[in-house]
Image (tube, rainbow over the protein chains, first blue to last red):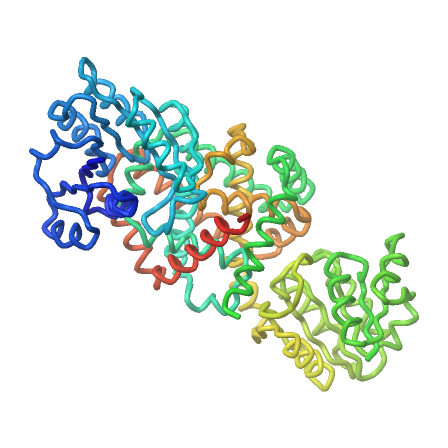
Length: 288
Length: 288
């Protein structure tokens, strides 16, 4: 199979280039960045120019969210008949809309994919990959089989459903970790110094705060701005204010009732207790 | 050594009863709850009444934060000369103040300890225990040695310093996890259904949200109410509002600058990246 990755020198582009090279496919990289050639060589892929787009069987768009729709729009017209156009953007509404328009009246397959993992993930095994099919066919099926054979857990969804769900799963989670980091800065809190006094749950919280701060801030910003987060931010801030008020009033009975209500809504908290115990025990034992 | 645990039938009381029994010490439990006797038998300890307080070498107070100061006050006068009075309350200012007054003019040792772990922790090995000495002596030293031999990491601090630090380490961390849980409830979000689409960082976030909701809500409430959290809650809420505003305005450059500033304040984020990768990989591999 000839697979061309637009943005293949980026972190996730490289991840997928390596993935397909390891499976014996011919991988081509189209990327304007100056070090594309050396990156491609290291990966066992070849750097190509736009002309190669019309030869590829699969064209995978791996570019930032804000440019993905226009890259999809510009790419589709030059693809050969029967080719698959796919993207791996973290949000789905705008790229799926762009893909739907771009392949209209053309003999192309369209598949919008969201791999729920980042570039530091070693393998696809057990990772969740969300598939939003736009127009399926033989090549979409081949991608699905390839991902399944690599151990991926695949879920099919609609773009709207995906974005609504990700507004909480990604949007709220990132928002909370980033806000925690902003708060530590605003308080001038000595994070390094606090390491000696860490409780495991604080330690794991700060591991993830640091993780989010370490990675591409533009990607996090674009995810926040492209998911419909208004209501979710508002709800989170309201709940923080409400809880803080209860604490200020010293109303312990009310505090207990609120937690019990959240516990009932949460569902099986004993499972979370066991899962978090395993994480804590792993953390305690790992530097033995 | 004769060790008497006031509140020894509670979760942490049992933990320390077991700890000392395993080390061959004579452990006595003073606890009003009706099932104290069967709990004590199972632990290899003996249930006693208040009279026994005057025999014990070490009296360990393991009661809720809100009653700890009065229990300390009522206990000290009946202890024998040279005994050690200690508590394991999660906050330190009020029990230390109470202990200081209670042992004044008496020949008693005083030690206020905060074990930074919960009752589901298997061993003391590698766990942090904070020591706030009130009046040290031979028995305080014996406790320290016993904890060290069990592998504890011991840190000495003043009560004020402890409570200021814990306002962030415990207070803010719990506050954030609880607020996340309240938000999921307010949104009516289907947590069980979201498990199929979890990213690892959301999965670990929800593991800890569920953990906090699963445990004693009164303890979390008392920690919130006894640490000086006003300014910290306010800062967190302000930062959430500020970040949400930047997202609403779609100001990606500002968003990036804010994250970069928090990254600089955070310090070594690559260490957090590596630590969180290990947690994620553990989670992915654990049900192999």
